[in-house]
Image (cartoon, rainbow, N blue to C red):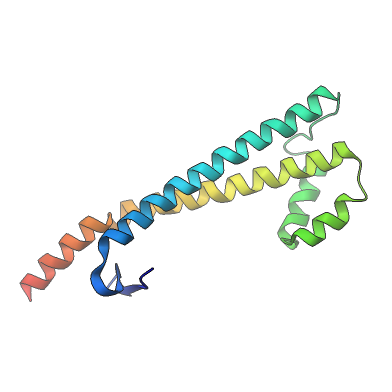
Amino acid sequence: MSKIHKNENSLYPAGGNYRKLITFQKAEIKLINVAKASLQELLIDYQDYLRTRGHREWEKDSLEVNRMRKIARLHNDAVFYMQKIGERPPETIANIVICLIRQNDYLLFRQLKRLGDDFLKDGGIRERMTQMRINSRKS
């Protein structure tokens, strides 16, 4: 893929291959939405697991969830979680996974929001290309 350069607050690909950049931006948004949908399906599966076995799902602001949030801020490697999970009962593991799913979903939400904010602030690639042509003609 082409390298992307920043010049005078305009984002453009090396070699002027704008079509690839537009396709990349659209694909990025679609893939983030696919990831969010997959996480929601997984969340439902874990909630069903807890419900069908008569286990409690941790409440949003429970002591357990707050502990998990703190741990997740400090550790982002699978090895850490795999070691800890081996020491816990299945209902705790399911709740830990639910916490991690929700945190990932929130991060994806923030990424989509940033892409939207960037679009509102800077416009789309076609708008920026048009502005670059206009500026080029003026000089």
